[in-house]
Structure formats: structure tokens, C-alpha cells
Length: 327
Ligand SMILES: Nc1nc2c(ncn2[C@@H]2O[C@H](COP(=O)(O)OP(=O)(O)OP(=O)(O)O)[C@@H](O)[C@H]2O)c(=O)[nH]1
Ligand SMILES: [Mg+2]
Image (cartoon, rainbow, N blue to C red):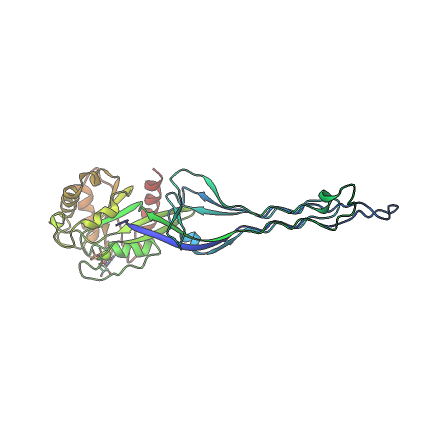
């Protein structure tokens, strides 16, 4: 399994070259001027540029057809036609381009920022000025521009979440994801509502923060209880984890130890990631008092109280997430 895969099919075409011009000089006292038709401009090319701040293909999906501009035709007095504008398609690191008809890999980009030309623009045609000779002083011929190229491309990438949400069933993970991001996970007042991981994108100005919501973890999950822990692989490569503790739940005090134990049993390295504790459902009775005791018990841990239902603590949380991702 590849994790979360984002893919989209796009159509791209470069620009055709502009035609060379057939033109003769016209001046007041020269009745039949020589040829002076200029060359056509080059068609624009299609290139892909890796941008490290992009995390998904969502921006590509808004526009599926990318066409570079054609070169303009040449003009009188040997003037060149203007070159067509290139199309530059911005993609996240780790993107692959695939031929949708054959499945062949066209290009595999790594993390380095680079620009790669996929389709060249058509060359502009030469104007009739080039074709004059002693025997042919008035060529009625100019080259046409070269035609353009087009292709369909499957663009594909594995999404790597920046932040993983970890918590017991019913702790409010999916509610938080749907508040922070564009995702619409299923939310309900029973455990294991989330059966497969969900992913959402939090747009924070120019920055995209990817958040992964996974099924709830219970005691013994590392040994296969509940939904097991197989889904934890989706948060292996995240930069940070948010531990959600339901402050209205009677077992809130033991939650931290339970979550840590299960993560430890799955892969100790998960506990070495930067993390932030969230006391959730702060709007419910007793929750504010429970938050205070949690804060005094877990000295040295950062604990933020939130209510996804009443938007309490959410702006601070978004700020913190931005900082964590920029570390
Ligand atoms: N009062 C209150 N209820 C909340 C809040 N956030 C979530 N809930 C409720 O808590 C219940 C569980 O929420 P979910 O978001 O589905 O919890 P989850 O952690 O994704 O649960 P699983 O997918 O089962 O692991 C739902 O009934 C939510 O409406 C909150 O801030 N305040
Ligand atoms: Mg859920």
C-alpha cells in the first residue's frame, strides 16, 4: 500500500511556431523593394517545476488543460514574430508523470526544486528574406512554423502528512480535522467511526499543512485489538503528532499513558516526534477543571485546551501547527 495517493489527469500542449512572413520592402522611390519578411516566433514550451511548498495536486485539479501560446507570425522589415508564452506547471516534490495509455513512467521528480521541459514549442518559420538569391529576387515563399505537440499525462504523488492526530476512539479527531481542513470525515458519537485514515489540507496563506486523521487507538491495539495499528503507518513520516485527550471522558487521566504505550509497542520512534497535547471538548462541564489538573500533572508537556464545537483555542492551535511545520 502506498499510503495516500493523489492523482490527476491533465492535458498539455506546447505552442506552434509562428509562420515566416512573405513581404516586400515598400519605400517611396523604390518601386519594387526586395523581400523583407521576418521569421515567425517560437511556440511556448510546457515545463514542470518542483515547488517545495506544495504538498498536494489540488492546484492542478482546478485547471486540467494547459496550453502554451503559439508563436506570432513574422512581419515586414525582417521583424521577428513574438515567441509564445511557456506554460509552467508547478508540482510538489516526489511527483511522478505517467503516460495514461501505456502506464510508462515519463519522469520521477525528487525533492530538489527543478524545472524540466516536457514538450518543446514548434520552431518559427523563416521569412522570405532568407530565400532570396541571385536568380530568385522576389521569393513568394516563407517557411510555415513547426506544429506543436500535445499529450495527456497522469500526474501522481504520495501525500505525506505533516501532522498526525492520535487519540482514543470518540476523542474528537475527525471533528477537529473537518474544522481545520477541507476534509469531510464521518463523525459520530460512537467509537471507531473512522475506519480508514482521512486526510485534509489546512490552507494557511501560502502554506499547506496536511493533517491525517486515523482510527482511534485502544489498549492492546498494538497486538491487534480494535482496528489494530496497521493504520499507524500513515503517521510514521509525519513531522509531528497531536495527542487528543477527551476532557469529558472519565478515563482522561490515564489516556496519555495508554496512547504512549500503544505507540511505543508499534514503533518507539513515533514518540520521538515533536508533539502537542490537546484537551478536547472544553465546552463540556468539568472539562476546564480537568484541563487544569492535566496541565499541572503533565509538567513539561505543551497542553492546549480546545473545543472544536465552539471554536475555542482553534486560532492558537493553527498558529502552533504553522510553527511546528516550519521547524
Ligand atoms: N461537546 C463537544 N463534542 C465534541 C467536540 N468534538 C467532537 N465532539 C463529539 O464527539 C463525538 C466523537 O467525535 P469524532 O470526531 O467522531 O471522534 P473521533 O476521535 O474521530 O472518533 P473515532 O473515529 O471513532 O476514533 C461526536 O459526537 C462529536 O460530535 C467538542 O469540541 N465538543
Ligand atoms: Mg474519527
